[in-house]
Structures are given as C-alpha cells and as structure tokens.
Image (cartoon, rainbow over all chains, first blue to last red; front, side):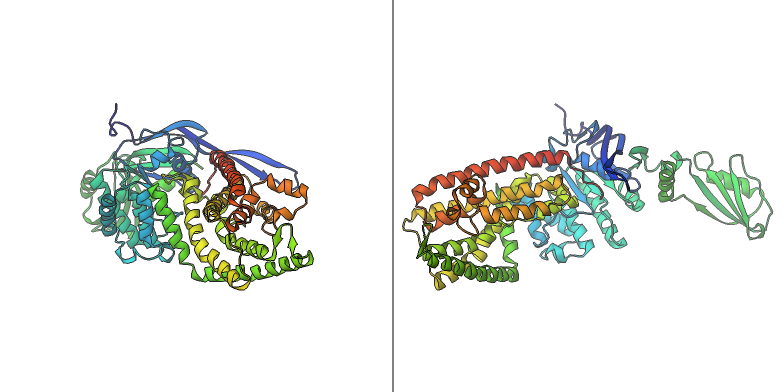
Length: 328
Length: 264
C-alpha cells in the first residue's frame, strides 16, 4: 500500500491527443480529412504539494492537457494518472478529490443566489453540514464573498463571479487544484486578491496546484515550477528561479560614468551594446550564469568613476515569448 | 441521493422565481385550451353527442389535462443540453461528482414539480369553472394518475435527452427537433385522442413512446380508462422509461468518447 504522498499528483507519460479536422475546400466536393496533434507527447511528473505554472501560447495544447487530466477527454496516445487514478474511467471519483476552475466557463447556477450553488455542491461532494459551514466560512473570509453571497450569480461582476468560481472549486478541500486561466479578464486588484488567497490556502492545506495562465505574474506569485508548452510538447520544464539562467538570457547592466568616455573595456563574453549620451551611459549585456555583477562593477570601476547604475532583468514574459517564437 | 434532493429543491426554487413567465404561460395554455375545447365540442356535436367514446365533458377534461401537462412534461423539448454540448460547457457538467443524466433528471424533477403547481393547476381550475371536468369515479385513479404523470415526465425527459445528446454528432439539432415536434404532436395524443386515429395510425402510435408522454397520463388521471385497464398502460410507460434511459446513457457514453471540447 502506498500513501497518497508517495503517489505523484500528476503523471503524464508521452501523452498525446489528436483531433480530426475536416475542412471543405472551395470548388471541391467532399471534405479533406486532416489530423491536428494538439498534444504531442507530453511527459510530466508533478509531486504532491508542488505548484506548477503550465504556460503556452493559444493553441499550444494547455486546455486539451487539462481536459485529459480531468477525464473529460480521452488521450489518443500515451498514458496518464492523476492522484493515482486513471482519469477517464475514474472521472467521478477523481472529481471528489480535484477542484477545477475553467476561467471561461461557469460551474455556478446562474439564476440562484451564490450561496445556493455551494449548498448543492456540498451535497454533491457529501460534505457534512459542519464541514460545509466551516469551509464556506473560511472561503467567504478569504475570498471576500460576504457582500454578494445572497445575490443571484447572473448579477455578479466578473471579479465577484471568479471569486465565487474559485470558492466553488475549493469547497470540498480538494488535494489537487487545477486552474485554467483563473484570472482572465480580471483587474489588478481582483487578480491580487485571488492570488493571495490561493497562496494562503495552499500554505494551510499543502495542496498541489496546476495553473495555466497568460499572465506571468500569476506564475511568479503562485508557482515554484514553470512548464512551457509549445506546439503540444514541453519546451521548458524547471524551477522558476533558474528559468532565466537556464535560457542563458542576458542580463543588462547600465552604468553612467562621472566623466564621459568613448569606450570601456569589459571581460570576455561581456558585450557593450551601446554608448549613449556622448560617452556617459554604457549599456552592457552579460550572462548571469557566467559573470557576477560585483566583479563586473569592479572591472569597470578600475577604469572610470561610476556615477550611477541600473540592472535589468529580462521579464519572464519576454523569455516565454522567446520560447513560443522558437517553436514557430 | 441527498445531492439529488438538494438539486430538485434548488431547481424548484429557481423556477418559482420566474413569475412573469409563469403567468404568461398560464395565459397561453388557457387560451389554447378554450380554442381546442371549442373545436372538440363542434366535432362531438356534429357526431351526435359522442365521438370515439368521448362525451363533451370527457373531451373537455382531455383538453384541460393536456394543457395542464404540457409545461411540466415539456413534450415540446428543451435545448439546454444540446447548447451546452456545442459551447463546450458540458465539460463542467462532466466534472461534477454525480452522473450527468441523474443531475439533469433531478433538475427536471424540480422544474416539473414547480410547473405542475404553477402551470398545471390554473388551467384545470379555469376548465373546471367554465366547461366542467369529468372526475374519476375510482379514487385509485388519482394515485395511479400521479404515478403516470411522473412516468410521463420521465419518458419525455429521456426522449428529449436523446435528442439533445445528438449534438455530440450533428452541429445543429434544430432540424431534428422540428421533426420530433411534428411527430410528437400527432402521435402523443396531444392534438386529438389517439383512439380517434384509424387503426393503422393507432398501431404506429402505440409502437412509439409518444402516447406515454400525454395520452396515458390523461387517460389514467381522468379515470376515462379505469385503474385496472390503466395498469398495463402505466407498465408500458415504465418499459419506455427503461428503454429510453438505456438509449440516452449509451449515447452519452459514445458521445463522451468523441467529445472534442475545443477552445477555452
């Protein structure tokens, strides 16, 4: 017997999904049958308690992967297990242990007060009244739902509804939380509120989080690990911390000198990209893995007096965009 | 079961909030009841006071019960599930920890519960006051009638579900709905009692589930068919429930296999 902690929360082995697409060509009878590989051999293991940001451009295969993980969609190749279960045949059992938010869809009852949806969901998940009450109380405080708990869902603003959706997904205290673009369309304040509660809830319960998003701030605030998918395959998989180094993405050091200088010498492997303001400002690019800022500054400081400096980190977003572009 | 109970209650409550729609529906059902009753009266008068075993009072009862059952049975069909399949929202339904058909059936029962009260009773009251209703002589007709109404609701639900689940295979189910509606109107005994049909058409009607949706609950509840004779009709309803439920679950299983919820 293995305890739940031993079993990886998510295990995808060479997972693939093909769609058959029939297109009609003008001037031709019949339709041509084409096969699109939405997911093309993804292998991924997520340990219990990890938080993974699963990012990729539109059409990269994120949603298809999530649909296979939740048992809605049958893989056409490879295998997968989620919380030790096989998703398609065990979809309903899995639904008791997994909480899912599809940012584009609602799982709340449109015409009923928000509170009623939780009553139905609690009954579906066989929560005792005590479990239901204490968990809902926690969610109401954490997601600030008290102002609109008795309002019909159709009257809620997008931000309120998304908080309501998240509470619906977390009501049964799932071990695995899968969020598909949970912050789509939300303003900064609403996004931050959602993220804050997700962090708290994860800290309290040690849940596994699997998140897709187009907002890299979501990933930076919520995830330890980043997986970038491109054209249905894993293009990057590693710790978020090491992402910049792993890509060899250049950092940028901008120094302003006290006296103008036509040029300064830099160590090998470091490039001066531009000299601006008649020799006052020098833009220098270097690899963060090979060169350290203090050594670089000492090298330059030996040649000229440094009046000011700024250090530029490449935005995660730019790096991810770079990966998308490579795959095209 | 507790979950289903909650869903039934929530669905009942949800429909009870649509007051304007309920009032408008009652008005329409009642107006059409008068139109249909006057046509029936004219036909029965022309036939010399009785037609195919129906007196004027029995015909009035047939019409008003039909108008009363129309909303709760939803024999005209629904579109919610087919739309959810097309828009991919069916994914959310499949992620619930309870079965898809039982989830929708519970919602249907809650809705039907409200519609029996809100849309069923008023036309009957109007009918009782204006044309009078033929009440059953045997009190067991009420009990068996109630069972028959529940089964009629279930037969219509399962047939409607099969129609909606066709959305897994066809892009537009409206064409199917139009055909279904035309066939249902005639063969269910909603427009005219099926015993007025020529034998060959009566044979066809009895081979379909449609009489189980309208004709059987009307006959059983009104006592026109006494309980002893109604029992096999109710048995037929039960057989249709089982047959259509198996059909719907087969379609659901096959549909899920080819489900391609793309985008979003």
